[in-house]
Amino acid sequence: MTPGMLAFEAMEKGISILALSDHNCGRNLPAFKSACETCGIVPVMGIEVNTIEDVHVLGLFGNLEDAMDFSSFIEFLLPDIPNRPDLFGDQLIIDENEEVSGIFQKNLIGTCGISFSDLVEEVNSRDGLVIPAHIDRYAFSVKASLGFLPDMHYSAVELIKVPTDMDTLGNTVIQGSDAHYLKEVGRRSCRVDMDEVSFEGLKEGLRAGNVKYGPGDD
Image (cartoon, rainbow, N blue to C red; front, side, top):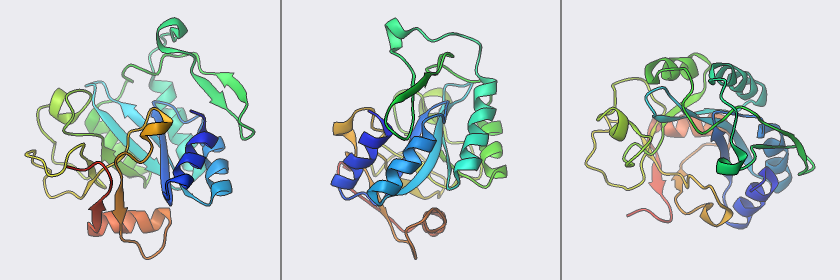
């Protein structure tokens, strides 16, 4: 799915604030920001980083420049392993006109050269939202790779199923669709009480823990 298709699908489903978080790369964020603004959706620019421990962590930003700077940092850490289009498909970069402007050559499926703890500190130092992703999932999570949630400073933690038997250490819990296909957009979501629908509003809402869960929660 392209950034424009993602934003339009979210608009159709009544989603008012939306994040794009491609694996280990933010090259599609400029097109995503433009598409969200066209659809009347507040864009949150992110990357789902795969740490050296095989843990997925969301780094989310409200400012495109901050997100692209973070993307450059993560891309630099990626091992110099070329993508295999025959196995993983082409890693397309889409422009604001929904046209292919390039193909990212390094493989984005694997881990990058940063540890879980260093990544958490890196995103926090950039004033972003740091959210360990799907911490209760069978793979690519703190539960699967570490066995527990380390006691660090997070903006929230993401669960597939609520409630959970995992110790979330008192962190705010969210749910997200983790959509890889259009039909999955909004399959899990959450409602955050905010003074205003904005990135700063989201940050304050998560800090206050004012979250309710949307479709797909158990």
